Length: 275
Image (tube, rainbow, N blue to C red):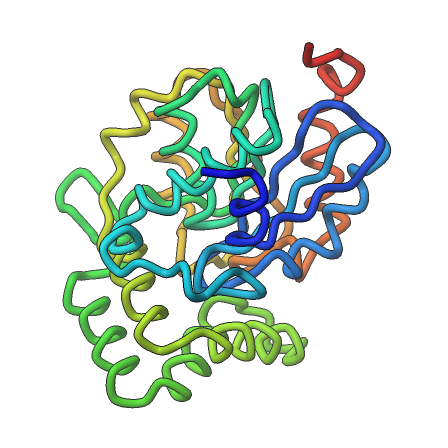
């Protein structure tokens, strides 16, 4: 795909004074603006790369293909297109929620593009699979969430935003997330929700070849503690960090802590020339 087309399709923005790319992948229903409190902290040492998933933010909505984006691999292929467009080598991928999964899928298919994965609230499978795996939800729970989306899109966005954010003393955070959800075409939101919440990428964890950081929030009902600990056990060479932050969006609710943890993790490689 032509570089110009990729930049337009995914509304790619690149800035910063460093050489090594640090790519920020949003979570479900979010766009690159959600990284505004975190990404600028890395511009001195990295080439900061922001993008939107097709169908969200300022992406090229006409490029949306229901078949391509019917599962997470389509989004991972887009991420690899972006890496090719910017000629990324040894990039840092910072992914939130399903963005972490999309980053993992991309890294497994083209590991030389990535040096590290930083995963905020990752979940390889949201559905409980007893007796050995707790994902936080029953299949019926998630089917009910999709049913609510079908019947009352605004009500679904309001409910999910509050559940995701989990900072009731700061209602503006949930309101921003709700607005982000509501800005998406309901049909696209539904397909992305199904692709996200009914995916099972547990086998992919074993294929990861690059070092990874798992950042786990407290009181996260979307990706509970058990899930973060599971990802850490399954990911070879991973580092696990339990945060003071609560909820599922620490880059919005607790940006200072999020920045500090990522910078501390990356400190040994910050000065290394990726070439």
